[in-house]
Length: 80
Image (cartoon, rainbow, N blue to C red; front, top):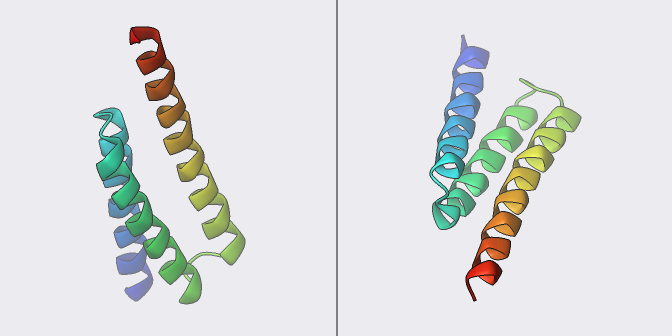
């Protein structure tokens, strides 16, 4: 049962992060990325997921944020 609780925390953290990306709230997304990364690290530390899986998922989440940041910057340049 403990593994299920840890996995649930990871899923919740990732969902909150992805919801903030959809809303294009980059400052909130940055905060939630840290929380999601922490949840993934804790899950890996407890052996619920493999360390490589945690690193891979954190990398994918970071790439999503960077892509959104790049989009925001390019649209700002178009306005200037």
